[in-house]
Image (tube, rainbow, N blue to C red; front, side, top):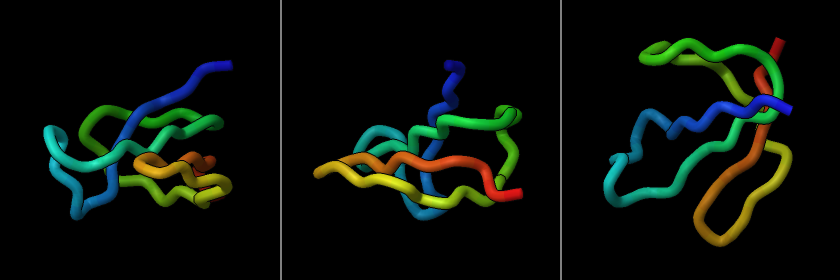
Length: 50
């Protein structure tokens, strides 16, 4: 399964957690809407909203 790694618009790459995107295609530098399906202590997991 291909995944993409991103962050929310308010997160800094060196400090904050990640958003792991399980499905769909995401382009580098583009904003997309993601439905969060899981959460860990630091990171979120989701899939692209259609």
